[in-house]
Image (tube, rainbow, N blue to C red; front, side, top):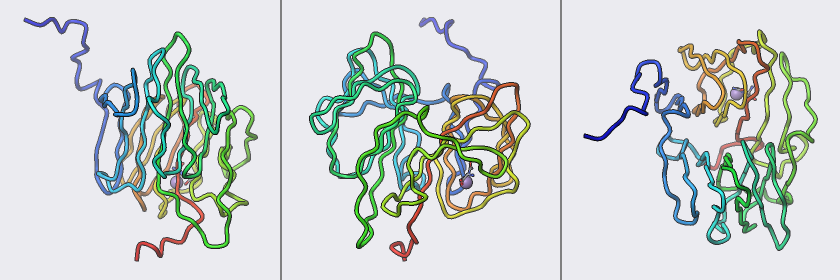
Length: 259
Ligand code: UGY
Ligand code: MN
């Protein structure tokens, strides 16, 4: 008989994932499952959101082994956001190489083929989001962004601070935001939000309570949350550590294309 002794069978305390389509999902790291993506070698993709949930984007946690990465340039016509959760990666765009470390942040407009390889000895984990770009007549498509969250200034936002990793506030060319929200323990939102924008949320540090559409759920580092449009949402940071999460949302468009 196979020996499963190394696996934790404590299902009730281990599984905290919830799926409420049309509302939200919580997908914990322990409950995520590996997929193989055809264009990636020695890499497992944990697919966290797709249109199967009603979402307009696809988001992955990519786990890239030493020597792993893209087999051929990613050239799919979508816009891309990449963020280094852990480890290092060599990113190549238009013949230029960039060495990414933890916190490395990339935004690419459509039609900017890139490669990404883990040349280090350790595993690299990345967040990757792909979405169709919505062009605006008369507004130029912005250039790629290659930075690190550590170099982005935090701005005050109600009861917490946040870093706008994509500078969408002053630039209609961007139709997505990726903000890094930072909460001191004990701080919380000033109100329960409900809005048209979808969210993909990855907990980077700390813990807290998320109120989602009537449910109050404890969340912590490495949990993932998808929030559908108009899912009422509220966060309160608990624990002893500063809480941080990175949050996708759609911005700067008026949704009439969907009529
Ligand atoms: O900007 C936002 O929509 C953000 N305050 N929402 C969230 O963190 N759930
Ligand atoms: Mn929100």
